[in-house]
Image (cartoon, rainbow over all chains, first blue to last red; front, side, top):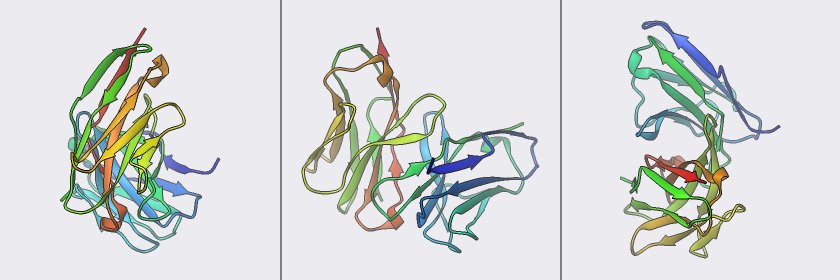
Length: 112
Length: 115
């Protein structure tokens, strides 16, 4: 099925470890986004990309890095995980700047 | 800067009763407005959107929302809810042609439908 695929779905990290979350979309969308969802906080934008090779900071970028080397993939990296990064991470993509996003099913990350 | 306020964090309601989930936004420019639904342990799904034209927009499962520019609101309504409507609902705003379409989300309203 066409859509946005996130891997992994679950992960437990120790403080200080690093990891990369992968987001892949097969809809030829230009725009891709990484959000984190925390209870009572809604969704907050971490980083986004408006096209291959471009990235920009969102509302809460500290502690995260991203790359968009291929149009269909958007990677989110945690260089040195902290307990405050325990969250559910969602990737989304859109064809253009308006019209709504297609979301992945999320990655539940726990940092201990 | 834009912002979205969802006035109720939780809304309990009995099956077949009407429901309204309130959403207010602030923006200095024209906006696009969205409602997303998140079922337990799933991602967000687009429920309905207002881009232009008729201020009343409808979804395929009986929800509707009305854009009220003077009150800067985009409340979501359903005349008769089902158990299956139990989910968290997020209102979101995007400014007209700016910010690369970044959506600003409200903090969500958990709708709990009881039998």
